[in-house]
Image 1 (cartoon, rainbow, N blue to C red):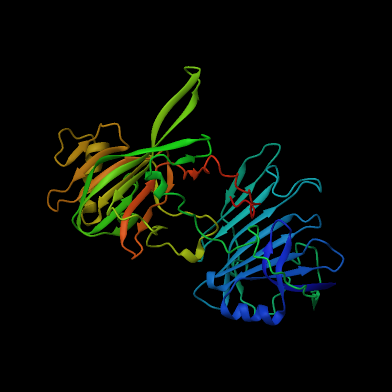
Image 2 (image 1 turned 180 degrees about the horizontal axis):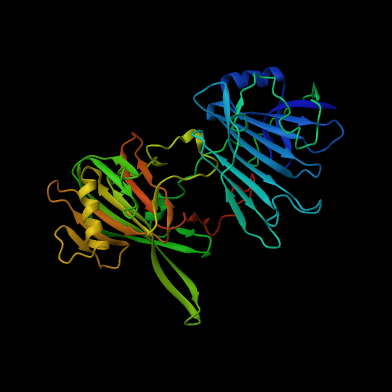
Length: 437
């Protein structure tokens, strides 16, 4: 079997075709510089590619997309180059098992298998069964070391990684594909780009009255004036953001250095209407969407997701989040220097219900904030707030143009999206790169 090998700067998902084809020499130069490029493997008489390899060494990333004869993606592999420069971790994979040639790509009824692996040997295999019975089974994948890791081949010496999926028993013979002349137009918005963690979204706008947003459930929500709910003293200069209801043997999940001081706490709020079944009428309401510790009045130039001590950004897949966990729909801001005493007071006051406990206060002012504790020895404080459910909540750190922390925000619900100006044309919807989980 003969397989043609071509190179390009990117892969256009909408056209299912390479963008800006280039020679092997140009691809080698990009490979050596760590710049993104793609490699396309085709059978001469087949319209859809066999596989597309997506490379970006500067992002520690190699991806593999495998297509069937109908042009549907049937396998997606995310590999990561870690500390050992000669090995790639098979970090994450999704396999789609279409039930017939008529089933659309990424159809919601399509069964799939997801494998999630980590360098320390941990992993999870999720088999999603669609149709009759449905449901999913989750197991620990029992894989050999050579099934988790792959030696990094030199440029031009990569095998056809999808050979087994295509039923090929013998190694194919490779030949260079004819490179088409590149066009002058810029890269389409539908071109592949290296994966990146979750984006902060319009956090600044959540504190600007009059801005229109949507959370996906309510078509239109209007930001109203934020509500100041109190202050928090952080004399140690290290802010903790965590779930106070989780085992804290290792301390708080997230810490952010800030200048020692007392800081304003406020809530971002939105007003919207919805149909109330109980009253059988449209009802207007105002709800909090985020809580913020305000360090400075300087506008945030950038927002970044705070990392836990054991987080490795090189392992993050597309739109992955990290943050603090909660089993009781609760988060908190606190002085990390007094974490132990503050959490002990929180547990004694809330869980054990000790009456008239010094240093513990229940808050009943209609805000998301519910409890406050204070360590008399240090002056450090803790303020607990409600989230809309259990799970993991990212912590967003806003920085000024000079890099100084100006605020720390936790969204208590999903990140809203901005709505366009009423007179603006509707945005173009892009084809997704494919569902992850």
